[in-house]
Image (cartoon, rainbow, N blue to C red; front, top):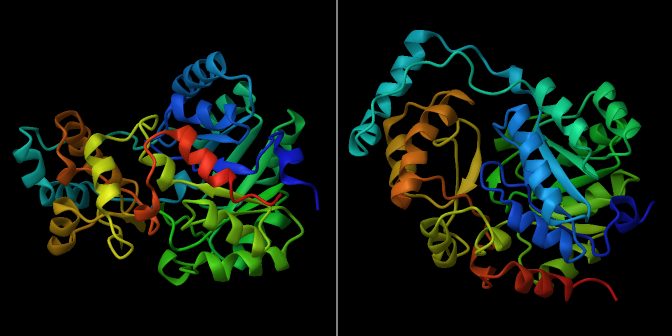
Length: 347
């Protein structure tokens, strides 16, 4: 098995979780500059924005970094105008509270994957990572032709095996403890909730690729445990998300610092896909109402009021993604988080 650091071109096998919608150039660069792999999530980015972001990132670091894409944008079940209106009206109280009009149905909810991927190829990051599926052979080959390492993400052993067969170079094994979206693709997310301690060694036994452990890792103890389980590296999200270098809000940071181990929930309320976060009034109200549109319709609709809630600092109407190790996220500076994690790496 090839060494993960050598494969990714990094000194320390610590990977920043690619926050879709919450990534920042400052945090991505900070992790890369320390010898890890900074990652930047491109959810919702059009090609021009991807080009601009990659250029800005390269202006502050010449170290390797990863760009992350969501697969299967076009797998979404069609939502009729009537169903869209019903879903939008269910969210009317939030729009009214913020003085916003209920939005009309858009022509398109997301940029095309093909256009995004072409922009990534143009940007030529050291690594491109994927969630929600196995990239096609054409995608993998196109990345490899440009010297780009391909990383896939699995929530089960079967998914890890499928990713290896698909030609990826490394696999992130993400346990059910992890914050944000559950990126399952072979079975429903609710049927793929395997914890990190159980998942990582089984994935390490099932594939010949380097395995990056994710979920519930926030300090040196989690890192040491991941390597003892057979991982070749770790991916960390929530601990970095609460730092001042991240793009998250003060309200989100406060929620992370106050969340106990049992303080997160799995919900489809905010995006239409199962995700782990800290429950707030928006989550409780939407779940109580019983109307949740499929992804990406729900995500697009809530995104209209979430953006205004962010501008006003209203945490109760934001998506407060966080993992079960949130209470272990004690540092507010990315360098301090990285040092703590690095202390758990094998000598």
